[in-house]
Amino acid sequence: MNSISTKSTRSLQARKGYTGIYVHYPFCYQKCDYCDFFSEGIGEGRSNVEDLLFESYKKEFLLKKANSKELKSAKVDTVFMGGGTPSKASPENWFRLLKFFREESDFSSDPEISIEANPEDLSLDFIQSLKEAGFNRLNIGVQTRSPRDLKFLGRYYDENKYQNLKYILQNSPIERIGIDLMYGLPDSKKEDFLDDLDYFLDLQLNHISLYSLTLEKGTSYSRNVKDKKAKPPNEEMQRDILELLPSLMRKRGYTWYEVSNYCKDEFFSRHNLRYWTYESYLGLGPGAHGFLDGSRYGNPRNTSAYLKHPGRPSTEESSSPREELALSLFRLFLPIHIPSFLEAHIPPETAKRMISSLDAFAAKDYCDWDGSRFQWKPAALLILDDLITELAISD
Image (cartoon, rainbow, N blue to C red; front, side):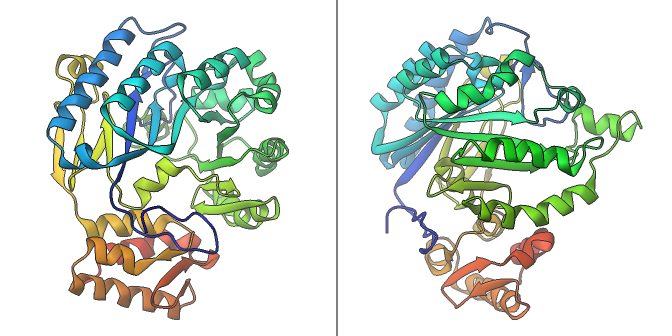
C-alpha cells in the first residue's frame, strides 16, 4: 500500500517512496514567552533579509537534493511552511518558492500545501493571495481569545483582528483551515478554555489542535517561573481538560488522531502525520530539522549563520528506528497496522520485544491489539509517556 489510509475503519500503514518539505520562516512580530521554536521578533513589516532568505532556501534545497538519493527519487506529497510566522512574508515569495519546488521535484497529483499564520496578518484578500500562490491549507495560531492570557503568553494582540477572526474563518478562500488553542494557563479557568473551544467548534473548522501550556527549557516563561516572576501552568486543570476532550470532541464530530490533534472527516494534517509515521522530509531554513536517507539533521538556530552557509547543518546523526517509532508512531490514537512498520524498519528480534510489550499493554486494557491492528484506548492517555518510554527501551 503506497498511501496512508486515513479512514477510521482502516489502519495506518508504513509507506515508501514519498517525502515532504518543511520550510522554517523565523520572523515574528514578537517572540512569545513560552515558545521554544527558533524565532526572532522584528515588529511590524517584513524582514529586510526576506528576499535573501528565500534565495537561501533554494540553495539549500539544491545542495540537499544533490546529496540525497531519497530526495531525488521520492514523490513530494506535502509541503509545510512553519515558523516563526510565515504569514509575515510576501505571498509573491511563497509563490516563487513553490514554483521552484515543483520544477525541481516530482509532486503528487494532490499535494497538501500548508502555511501557518497569525490572526494579525489575516484578511480575505491576503488569504486569496495565499491561495493563488498555491496553498490549500491554512493553520492559524490563535492560542486564546482572551487579551489577558495573550498578554501573559507574550503574544502580540490586535483587538480588531481577533474580533474579525470569525468573519475571516467563515469566508476564507482557503477552505481547509486549522487552528491552535492552548489551555492550562495559570490565571484562566477551565470554562474560559471551553468557551473558546465552543466558539470555534461552532464554525465547523476541519482541524483543531489543542495544546496544554508547558515549561520549555530556555524560554522566557520557563526562566520567569524559575525566578518566581510568573506562575507555572495549571496542571490540575490540564489533566481535567485532557481527560474531557476525547469524548467532547467526538460528540462534536471530530476524530481524535493524536494526543493534541482532532479533525473532521479525513482532514488530518498529512504533513504532521509523516513525522509520526517515521517518513522522510526535507527541512529548510534556520532552525529547521530534516530526516533524509535514514539520518537526521538540524540547521543552526541563527539566521545570519544560515544565510552565510545554507545547507550546512549544525547537527547530524543516524536515526534509531525502534526508539523513534516508539516515540512518534505510538502518539497516534488511530488504528495502526503494526506489522507494516516493523517489517519496514525494525530487525525481527527487536520487533518481537516490541510485540511482547504490546501484548502486555493489551492485557492491562490500555489498547486494542490483535497481533496486527493496534489502537490505544482512552485509559492509556494519562500514562502515555510512560508506556511509550517502555516501548522505546524494551529489551
